[in-house]
Length: 178
Image (cartoon, rainbow, N blue to C red; front, side, top):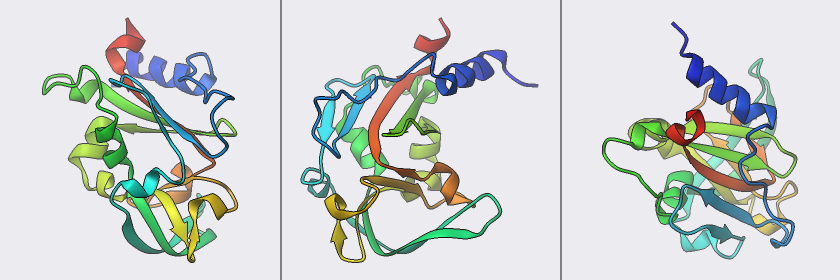
């Protein structure tokens, strides 16, 4: 049976009616704002991302809905999304509430992807969602499409691939449906 509250949440998130805070225009080009239910909002740029543990990813093929490769990244390096989320110190996160938190990632063009907190911190998916810091020896600031995020655990990873990542919002389901 479908949960009407969950369906309503998805409609709000993706219709633009519930706009997780847009990236402010006064942020530097290429900056990523981490906000929402956090103790303190973070602003990350190409220099700040390597302060996190940068992991060697290797070659990545991004696949469309039919499984065909539409973009390849060679010798990619990246930072795990969950490392950034932990640094943002989510507010109100307890053993009883973590299942009601989710993460909305937004690209500069408005494209959004959604992850549940459990998906990122309680499944293998969380070990494979990266913000790319370099590809083919080129640092983030030189990558054509700006900050890129990819979920390598997805069968068709192009669906949640973001180019021009501009915002990461940690949201609490209880605040949305009340």
